[in-house]
Structures are given as structure tokens and as C-alpha cells.
Image (cartoon, rainbow, N blue to C red; front, side, top):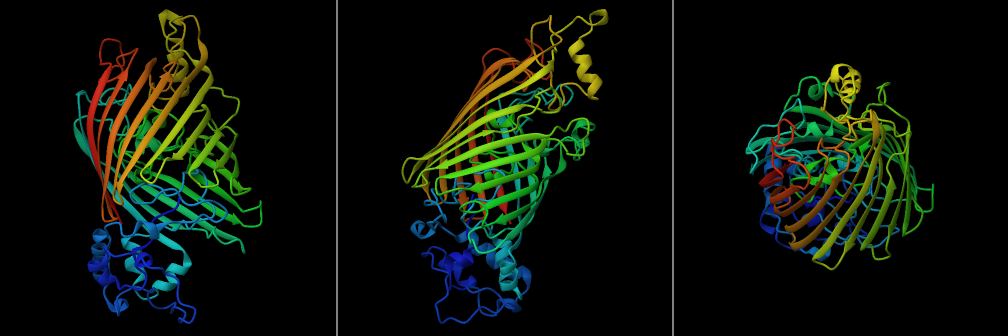
Length: 530
């Protein structure tokens, strides 16, 4: 996805200090006039206030935040981005979390992907700011507190993996507030607009908060949750290298090596990458990250292909017991206008034998821009796993549960994390487990800083292997996003969900008759970007 431009770039020659008063004016072209002198690499970038390099860093940071918070959206027409070798970028960021349709495992080819923010603008206006910007290295992140009011009242049970707001995510504790995410990014973005020379990039993302529960991979600091059940934890959720091969394939190739977000999905773990605060059930129960290599080839204006080889879903490649060499492949089609994008994937296909989150994941997403105000996002997936222990089998010694014993023998915990058992006929020790899900977002852009979203979500956990309850789920959410300038996001929402065949909500024991079929929630978060 493309990222929002720096306010310095947006405002062009306007001084940074003047942006506090002029942030409501139109955006200016940042290209220098043909006879303009080359910028001084040892000085600040063009557009900073005169003498800014002599100011203290915190003084520049204060001015930068004032400018970012004063931004009112400017002239939307001036933000139009053309994709090299493609159509027009369909949306704008803000208010959306993306401006080009999401492509997993790669930068968006043909557009500038550098991320700008108040912190980097303050650094660019200091001594050596131009050199720093030319290096393409950036540091940024956010702090995201959140909270909810729910019709559920029990606490989340870390032993059974149920209770509270579960299976809703990420607000699993009801009627409480918490720090969901504190994220810090270090990255260099490869220049994948040009097609003249090889380039490279990297990203390291450190995440702390309650959301680590959903992002960790087995064998990568996973003991914080699997052994200690900590409410707050740390996860190095992304660490990878990008290599840009401009002459490989017709319009270039990106090769990503390391740990990256699973391909594809409308949603992602990191808060600013999502349209709403909460996550759909579809997203909550599919793979999160892979460790491996993914190659994205741009064949033409309309077509891209992706191939991947990983160690499996949410597992460390050095985990000999759980890793499994797993290929994946995707096709990406975009219309000439860029308003439609269809993205089918076989996101992992191996022996499908039961182990840590070894689901086989067939998925397709479709993005469609209806007009300047409306667009819709749709995702469907089918997942399966073979030879899954049956938790409904009582044919062991002295009536013990063989399915539970098999899980406990392999893992030091039960119903804790990804390798849950299935609910099948009592005569079976193992069985085939599967699930199907469908999701739709309808988005309406009120203005350059405001967005309304309606989400419809369906999950059929046909063997109860993903949620622990064998039932069909229906979830509906109404969300609103308001940006304060382009530095703070406020995202309140209302959510209702229903489990048709089981009392899955407010059920800390996981037993029939101990919970509720439905749940309603009011929730909100705030994302403070730096």
C-alpha cells in the first residue's frame, strides 16, 4: 500500500513554521524548478523554516506536530497518485489505512512507499536532514490504547482459551481498557518506482501490548503466552529484507526474505493497517505471519504473480517439531482504472497433517471502488487440517479422552494457542477439520479525515477446531474513523455477534449451558502516530 506524504512534501516551499497557519491551504508540487540549486545534503530539506537546523530537536518536533495536527485534508485532487505501470491509486491515506489495494508480502510496486510522520519531518528539518531523507531510512510508530463495554462479564480464561469477549478480537477482556499496541518501526524502503537499478530495503517492527497474544509465532518469544499467560507481551512481528530487481519480469520483481504478514488479507495485525478497531472473525482465525521467502512479479499493468516458500504458519523456522516446508502461490489482477483488484491465493499447501496452526488456506479478496465516496472490500476463505485429534472421543483407558491426551502429549497445555483439537464423531480418534468464512466491508468517505464502515462477517467453524465451539458465527460492526490532522486516529465502533449453534460467548469453561449465544459491544481506540 502507498503511504501518506510528509507535510513538508505536501506543502512544498511553505516553511514548516508557516504550516501551522497554512495547513488548510492547497498542496504544492515538490519538484524543484529546472534552474533551482541542488539541495545541500548537509542541511535541512526544502520547505523547512529558515534556520530550522539551528533549533533544538524538541522545538522542531513541537512545530512538526502542530503542523500535522492542523492539517485539514487540503486539496484532495492534489493527492492523486499514479502507479507506474498501473492505474490511478484508488483511495487516499488518510482517511483510509491504504491508498492502493493491499498486497501481502511485498511493497506496492510502482509507487513510493516511504512513510512520513511528525518525527521524521522534525529530523528532516535538522542538520543533515536532506542526507537522511535521501538515505530512505525512517523511524516511526504509534501508541494505541483501547477499551470496550460489553454484554459479557466473565474474565477471559487463559487455561481454556475461552470466556470474556472471546472469540471476538482483539478486545478479549470485557468492560476494560488496555494498551493494545506500542509499535516501533525501523526501516529502509526500497525505491521500487525506478526501473534503472537494483535497490534494497528492510523492516524491523517491535510490538508491545495485549495484541501480542494474536501475533506471536511458536518459538519466537511464545513462552510469554504459552507458558506464562501474560496479558502484556513483546513480539518482533516483522523482520525482513526487500530486494528490488527492476529488470526481472516485465515491470520488476520484489523479493522479500524474513518474517512478514501473511498473504493476503484485507486486515492486518498492526492497528493503522485496519479500517476498524476490532477484527473480523474471518481474520482472527486465519494465519498471521510466515517466515520465508516471497517473490512478487509484476508482469503487466493488470497482472502480478506471487510465489512463496515458508516454514509454515506462525512458527519459527528453527522449531524442528512444528515447522513444515510450505509453498504458496497467488495471482493478482487489477483493472485498467485501478478500481478493481482480485487476489486469489493458495496461502500454504503441504501435507496438511495436524500440528501448530498447520491449516491449509485457500483465500480470495476483491476490492472495488464504486465512486469517489464508496468502495467495498470482500474476502472469502476455506481452511482445513487433516488427522486432527478428536476432543469428543472417550475411548481411552478408564474413559479418558484420547484426543485430549494426544494434544497434551505434544503440547504442555490444552486448548491454549493454535493446535486445538476437533469436535467429531465420538468413535473417531482423528478426523478432518475444516472451516469456511466470508467477510465484506462497505466504506463511505465523508471527507478527507472521516470514514464510516459497515462490516458483515460469517464464520462456520464446522469442527470447532479454530474457536473451540462447533458453530456458525455471524458478526456485524459499524465503525467510524476520524483523523485529528494526520497524526491521531479515533475509531469508535458498535459490534454485534451471534453463535447459532453454541453458547460461545461469555463462557470461561467452554461447556454447554455456561455461556451465551450472542454478544454486543461498544469499543473504541485511539492511535497516536509518531
